[in-house]
Structure formats: structure tokens, C-alpha cells
Length: 357
Image 1 (cartoon, rainbow, N blue to C red):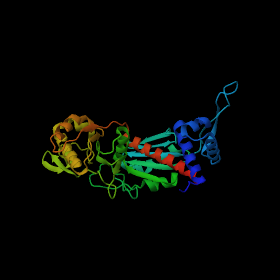
Image 2 (image 1 turned 180 degrees about the vertical axis):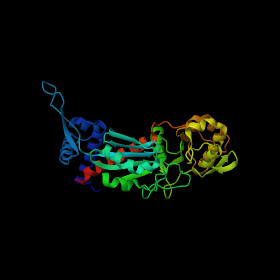
Image 3 (image 1 turned 90 degrees about the vertical axis):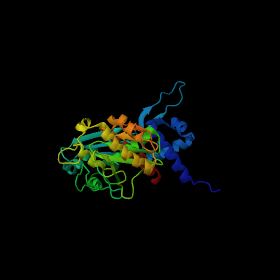
Image 4 (image 1 turned 30 degrees about the vertical axis):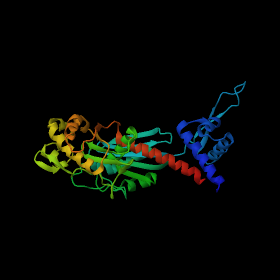
């Protein structure tokens, strides 16, 4: 049997120490030995290497020592300039940008409102610049309330999409400001990832019902994006409307629930519509999702969808294959999902940096 090389063993030790510090924030070498299960000499060597590489630093804090209390111990933590992840959300209400450190703390948070989608192109770089404020950004994660091309990160124009921001390419906008990599995805996909973490399940559908309509399918623990990234764009799925079979988005036109001059749903007026008519249309969408994807249950999110839970549940109970219907549980789901992904990528990047030294 071939023994692992010393380089590999050192790399594994360094990763254990780094991840322990990410979780514990500040630890002595003795505490790191307990947390990692490594020997004290191995931990001491790992800490020395990581300090030399600029990834770990002595915090300056000491344990009480002397007079029978043992040796004084030094606390170590991640270096202050180790780098952060940038998280951006682009939504009808505005553009939000925040920096997250490897501990998972939000160190800056900036939000700029927009009056119209066309303002995004100018507001996005301004908001990011304010949030970064000279920090070292290692990677960026973007959530957009528009369809996203999974191969390029560009926002995609689809008929009847209510929040069109023009030919916006977030990767191109952010590259001069923070470099790469930049990961861009649809806001509903990020929301589903946040819900997956909260629920601890691997197969469900997330139906977003707000100003726009969207869906994310989580199967075998992964969000299914499709060939081009447009899986879950349900606006044109045919369901039951007031006049019979009709595309889902047209139901709201027939009910007079669109905002003037756009296909965006007038959320303030949804309560004026017959809940049974809306629930029947939604049930048709749910039936299609269950037929094609076989989820364990369906999560209803968005600004007005959860208020119709009882009516939706009642209508879905009539379908050939009823599944449980639940209300989304995560606050700010798109931002939460994008932030969690950014943190995961940031920590992985730091571990890789330790191996490259």
C-alpha cells in the first residue's frame, strides 16, 4: 500500500485547522488539537505554516496562565485581510450588495432602491463599490429576478417576464470592480437552496408567487436548471383559467391583476380575486410539477402565494397524485441562499489557497 506523501498530510492538517478556526473564530493550539483530533506538534506546525502564508494570525489574546494554571496559550484566528465574498441581489425593489467573511459574518451591507428596472445598469456598480469599500473580494455571487443563462451568467429576455433590465451581463459589470469568479443564478433557485438547507430534504418543488412567477425543482439534492438554465420558468405552462385552458401568466390578465403596462402581478390587488379561481390555476401548475418531477412536497413562497395555502391545498387534494403543500420558511430566501453559497465557496477558496502555498 502506498503511503500518503508528507505534502498531502500537511495539506489535510492545514485544512482541518483552517476549518476549525472558521467555525470556532479563535482557538489556542491546544484547543485546535482537540477540535481536529491532531497531535499538538502537528497542530503547531500547521499553525506556523498558515501564519507564514498569511491565512492565520495571532489575535494577541492570551489564556490565563502561571501559578499552577499551566502555560499561557495564544489564541489564533483567521488573518484580518484574508478576503471576503461579495453577495449581490438584483430585484424589483432595488440592488443589494454585501460582503461576507469566512466566519459567515456580514461585514458590509448596502441597499439602493430603484424606481425602474432600467436603473439597474447604473445602480449595480454603484452599490457594489459602496459595499466593497477597498476590501479584498475573492469571489462574487449574484441573485437576479430574471431568467439567467447558466453558461454565461447573462440575464435572458423571455416573453411576459415582468422585470426586464435590458442586456445586462452581471459578470461583465462586476469583473472590473472585483474580478472573478462571479456566479449568477435566478432568485428562485437561490430561494430553493435556502429552503433546502432549512428543511434538510433533497426532493421538492419551490413555487414562487409574487410580482413574477417562478419555480425551482430540487431533485436528489440539486437544483435542476436545465440545458440553458431556464428550467422552472412556468409563466407559459398551460393551466385552468377563468376562460378555460390558458397559460398561467394569462390567468392574471383575465382577472385584471396585472400592473398597468406590464405583465407584473399587482400584489396589492390579489386579495380582490376569487381565491378558488387562483388556487385552481395554481393547482394545475402543481399537478404538472408533480407529474414531471415527482417531488416529496411543494413549497409555496413569494409575497402573496402563502396567503392562499388553504385554498391551494384544497384544490391540489383533488389531483391524481396529491403531495403535501408547505409555506416557505426562510426570510429573505434569495439573499439567504446566495449568501450561503458564497460562504461555502469562500471557505473552499481559502482551503485551496493553503494548498497552493
